[in-house]
Amino acid sequence: MTTAGTPTFDDRAVVLDGTLVVADLHVGRGTGGSLELPVGSNTELVERFTSLVDRHDPERVVVAGDLLHSFQTVPRPVDDTVAGFERACREAGARLVVVPGNHDTMLDAVWDGPTEAAARIGDTVVCHGHEEPPEQGDRYVIGHDHPTIEIEGQRRPCYLVGADQYRGSEVLMVPSFNALNAGVVVNEMRAGDFQSPLVTDTDELEPIVWDEQGRETLSFPPLGEFRRML
Image (tube, rainbow, N blue to C red; front, side, top):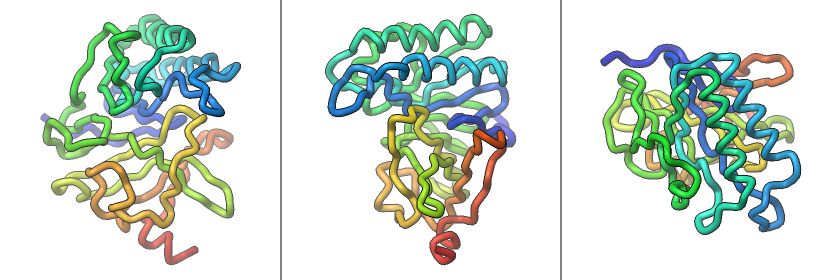
């Protein structure tokens, strides 16, 4: 197998060799402890997801864990949202695959399509990242920690990319696709502060921010250097 090529970043997602990867959609997450989706959230998630599929025309879409938010119930809007994701993939001719995360205990209630413990893109392994991956790869694409970076008092969702993170392999962590997730500020975090066991050296993690307004990626120095600049 060959390692997937250069990633393309777009709206909290990443594209690698014809596969679109999103993570931590947390469908069903509400505000104030309610499990109901706030007005507009269902539409916003589906619209952004559909726009990504339309722009990149992937052969496959992988949800890298935590498609759902609640561990115990599945409110009606969740069904509608998941159906919207399925519809977007079906109309684009893309195969939708779910890699379960730690929140996906109720997945069977809304999803009867393909699930995989990990999805492969060449020698890249896509998993949720909450536990040791079931397969070895030269690169791991994960979610789980919902990374954000704080710059001049503003928090921005970010990707984190680092070589030699897990058993000598690169780790690419994507931000939560759901904008309701505030995320964790990674500026001062050390490896032990991350929930994912795949993060081992935060000094070498490079934050990448997707600037929606400019439709471009903004790259920053590795966190070890970035901390010294603050």
